[in-house]
Image 1 (cartoon, rainbow, N blue to C red):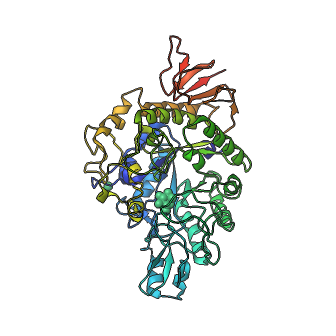
Image 2 (cartoon, rainbow, N blue to C red):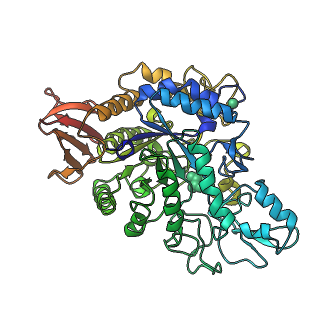
Length: 528
Ligand code: GLC
Ligand code: CA
């Protein structure tokens, strides 16, 4: 079995993980200093968000040089050292590759601006004399005008011009970038916006609903998404990766809802895995969760790929907050939505055990293991996510899930670094610091550490299959071989724990014989 089929992968949002030089911005030195924490947490690999040279108009998803490290994060030598150090700690490294667009400061775009309309340099992007009706994913039009009157396409911010994937230079550049990082020892790539690289020829208008704020939920197979030709790119990339042996891996960021179309990206000669956003989007309800789990397993089995389970990332409202709401979908990023954080935290604990017990790989977004909630009361002038500005504040944007981690101490910046923190941390995070939680066996961090350790050593967990047990409505119960069961209680009352030896529970079992599982709780059982 290959490692990635059942891996636990920790997402490092570098700017907010740990600051090594006291300038308030997380960096490679900070990450290196915390590798011990990650090894003790029990994950197998790290996915590091973009660390390349960037003006940081979109947190580094606007890349000006794909072959060097942004000075805010360190140097290329620091990155090389980090990769080696992580490997010594038994942690693999997955880096983020951003092929849909560059930064406007990328030399190709600068050249295109200089050389003017009709120049070969403009053909690497989508320059036109007239626009179509496409909207940016971040709000507002997907076109911006340059001084000579032409318009260029950007599905995201105006500082992120979309590359033209019909251009041979673009096709050739990315395999070369992959090799650059593979030669430096990275174990894989997370592919940003993987379904959108190819646009329909002629860039036709979209039909139907597309006005207004970004929703992240539009249909598949549109002129700017999930074009059949995109699969050629990943077949090409897969041969490059294959030259480096069977242990290097691709994970695609693929927001494609149709299961059959989604699965096409995971055919044996394309990507190894992709994020399971249907699961992430699912409400905290037994019926829909079971349906999405079954759908996921069936979809992946059809192409022989392992499922992945993801609760959160740097783009969505933190799930402690989502699960504390009546509507636990992830789209509400506005002030004043009633939220019960205690309930959200209970459910997040149960969800952690659920995801870690399901067959396949699991992702942990930094701060999940501390139970961090979304932060809403950031001063507007400190918000950096272009979504905030481009929607005129209708969408608060994603800064609230990117607040620097609290490591220890009683006051901000909670040992994030010796200086401040680029976004202010709530004062009450003093109760959520890693140091404080390490000393508390009932903390979220202790739950994650024990669960990840059990998951690692238990042959029933990770890659494989599950069998549902009959259970009452509102309860998810399944078995895995050999001798393992997971029971999640999504009802609002206690239920009986089935036979077996409890290995870990997300809440204390009740009753004199400890045979009752509280509401919003999960338990793992050894059954043989
Ligand atoms: C992906 C990233 C997101 C970024 C966008 C544009 O969705 O996860 O953070 O803003 O792509 O690159
Ligand atoms: Ca720093």
